[in-house]
Image (cartoon, rainbow, N blue to C red; front, side, top):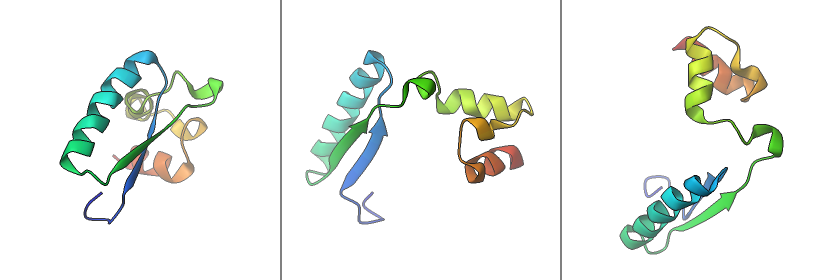
Length: 80
């Protein structure tokens, strides 16, 4: 964030367990960078079960992840 001159980070929350981790991270980030703010968004119900790990695994298995991520992200995952 500092390199890019950003003052806000946007994170997703799916479950209560996400909140616990993200809350700790936000407090530490604020301690290190007092001007930093964290904004949380909740996903649509159809995507609540998704995680980056799941999408990466889909691509590693040779399946097309475009149903779950933008096509530019899918292409990058499939290249790996």
